[in-house]
Image (cartoon, rainbow, N blue to C red):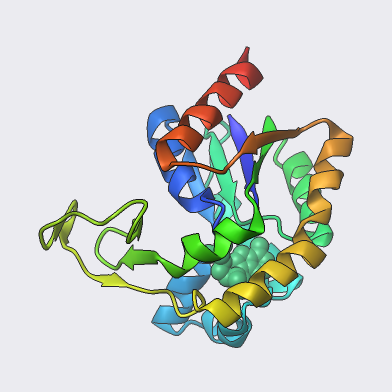
Length: 217
Ligand code: AMP
């Protein structure tokens, strides 16, 4: 299966894609994670991306498209994948269409996670990440393990630098202006499949699974 998870920041794309990829044996390609790794290790790409990320703006398309080209080269014909956080502009979606043609590949579906704006700020401001295992938690909806141990060692929680309320508001505005047009883009191709992303993590997970079962049948 080759999927895109599309939705506003805080819609649960990262959390749900990591659960779905385990169950369906898919690879996840999260542009946010790749950019953070580059930023934290000080690569040239990371340095170019740093200020955009901190302001909650999109990193320029040419940098993202070059990065995706390199990443997709690591995928074989048999690999199923989820693209999380890419594409985020129409130019990126058009570049992906071209890349897929070159790879002789196609998308199976674009899952659009619909979440009301009010719940997004609440979700993101409570979000905490673990440096050790990379998982994302929420201090109310999905609390981290009670002891200091996480699944890969000692739990090391932090709040993302772009998860502050002011930056989140900017990220939502950027989403509306630059990314939301992709919903119509993929509706036109018949690939868009809307999933209600409001509710508990488990409820949303079950909805995604039943969507995937329908898409596969
Ligand atoms: P995320 O973890 O997906 O919320 O991404 C964090 C930040 O990385 C975003 O706010 C952007 O600054 C940047 N970013 C991630 N993916 C993209 C993309 N496809 N295009 C442009 N910027 C991106």
